[in-house]
Image (cartoon, rainbow, N blue to C red; front, side, top):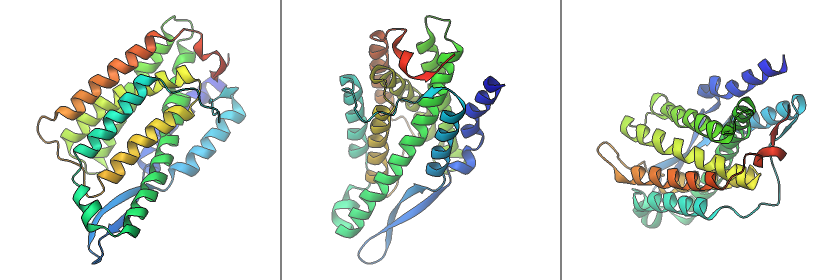
Length: 263
């Protein structure tokens, strides 16, 4: 009975995602009062994920790997994160607004809102996709010597495909969304390998938060157009795939013995 209930818990955040991802737009204004942009703030993700963690830890023998002491984050993961932050800065349409239009108080507000929003989204998505879904697939494939690879690929593809919601409900361009699906899938696999190597879910949460913060803050006046061929997400996807593959090569099959679900 617990196994069937667990499958439902794995799927629950996806089923409820149209409600859970509802955002409150925090308006960022110039000195004149003119609205120059906004940053989306999740309303329901934090209470949902806290309750979700408590339920799973209470019912199943499970260790998410929340540890205050973080092992060194793999170098390839750090390089990948710096690459996407750099791309967010280079492709930003908001730099002039941030440095020449916004008063210091509004810049501070944007920094804080973007930080809190990114932290909540990072916790939510990493707990759901790496903490629960990835570990669930590892548990299902536990008799295979490729359990980590299979779980990493499957959970990451699902993670990537769910970014289609950005176009369906967020009004994002379809071209931009399809790019996002590709590199989010590759990024999800990299996060999974970081999670396995560090045995600490805080590590991918921090990396995820850094990426989302740079996206929210440096694109507060609007996302860059990707209606045509855009090389930046393609290059990033390649970087993530290479980084994830290199990390996977250094992972042993019994690495997950101290985190995840027990038999």
